[in-house]
Length: 511
Image 1 (tube, rainbow, N blue to C red):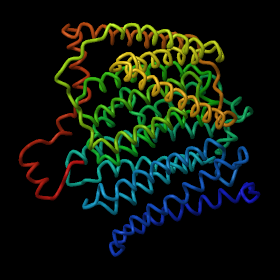
Image 2 (image 1 turned 120 degrees about the vertical axis):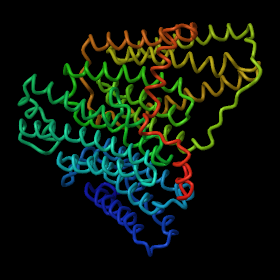
Image 3 (image 1 turned 60 degrees about the vertical axis):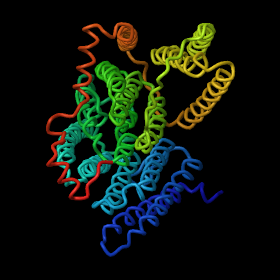
Image 4 (image 1 turned 180 degrees about the horizontal axis):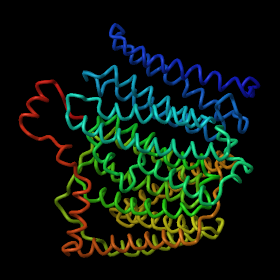
């Protein structure tokens, strides 16, 4: 294994294999290349993926290799993005067969994901801007790939404008930082001597620019519309978008953590993200369209990820981004087979379920309290303890308390315990992997924690009230507002018979 100890060997092999996969994708654009080459292309995609995995296992701390900064976080992000790309492209071989843009789809998706992985490996801020810009352009083209569909073109135009706006804001922030510090290399920009060059007001202004550049691609309020409208995109594109690109906000803030941590701008991000969590959760609960339910869930999950960044828990935000990406990609890829079964009979609650619910409340209290007592006493850990206790209670009610008889409760209890063990193992593994790589943020200001606690408690209270008084006027107003917010606008919806006739005559289909 001594060959893997060379600091330059694995990065060189990885970059060569990444270039080969990129050329393979471009090779598909040649009309004379048979479509069967798509299978060969997806096989080639596994090569840089395996190289990133080996590098993650055998990496030697942080290494600067030319314009690249390679550490555990860089290799993990590259592995994650390339894994999502491989899974989605392998899935699309049969799913999109027959589409007019079949070849272009694989080439664009390869370019987009390769650029996305290189963006997080870059130590040079100019390269980061370049590759992130290519990622946003690739995503814009993918959204509007079905050019014969007017709604796709409209969505692509709106998304492209917002992406361009967010990229220009990021460019402004980077130019400001480099002008003040005199460096383009991120590792030098984030050094203590460089950070001393930033006055308090300059630091806050730069952080506000970073927040604006982050909340747009993360589809946070008030920029959530582009993601809701992109639900019309083919399912594999939605999977890549929600799994590997929308969550880039947490990654970007993690990279700039030394500048962002301990600044008043954290409170601004906290308020925007908290509102987005409530809004996204509401959309998820009231929508009947399965893909829009998933979009609402993504808005809420990205909001919570940015809350973690606002509270200085960057390692938790990265773990959240990884696990959410894998989970959401799975949900989108199986969206076509999602069927809701409605039972005609109403189950009468069993008297014993109350006892099991009380037991679940005790378990939730013990787990949340135990987590709080054994963790560092900061604002994020308090929030985590509350969320953990609430999640445990909900999971217990669904899996154990509401189980069908003793056999059902026993099976639910085993599943509950197994899920808890797996979560703990995964959480611990990620924590140790990122322990010395991800910046440990400065504890967030006390007002930030108080604001978040108030928002969470107020949101939970409103949810309980709405569930109890569903016939109230206030509930109806909120319901209709969320429904209108999550439904497409007039220029994003085509249901006229002439349009449907034209779409069918062109061999189009909605996926």
